[in-house]
Image 1 (spheres, one colour):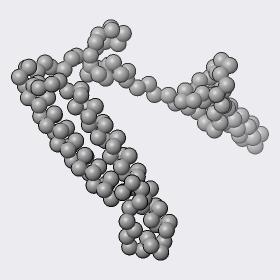
Image 2: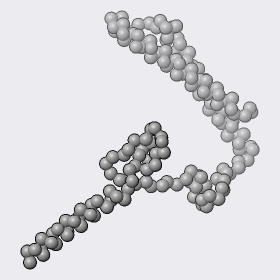
Image 3: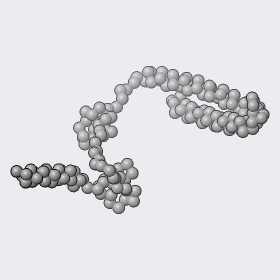
Image 4: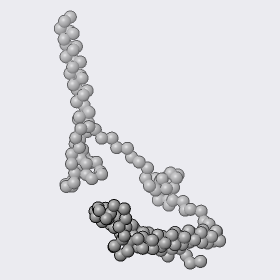
Length: 169
């Protein structure tokens, strides 16, 4: 009876080793090539082997199916549903509102630009606070003013581009 227990224990051990080894046989070596995972790198130089576990890939929805609400059959080539048409008078009103908002933003940005340039004084702004004793603090403020002027100028140019895209009233 002792030998039958020993035989059963050996069979159980062999079965456990076999069960644990099967997942290792089920998956080929996987490579990561940029954002892509593959088991066939096909000569790509940016591929590195993935170590330390199995990889599960879950397929997402395709952009065309998501855009059409998922009602179009895959592969049907159906175009996404267009946005509903708006009456011409309503569209002109929307364009006029957008133009008014953009013009207000442009005036505000131009006023801010004038304030910044007045404070900047061509790269020689007045020293304030402890900047007379700490020259680096002064240089940091001058650099920040210059960067603010450049950002604000880019904002002004962007608003002007948006205004030029709107139809004329």
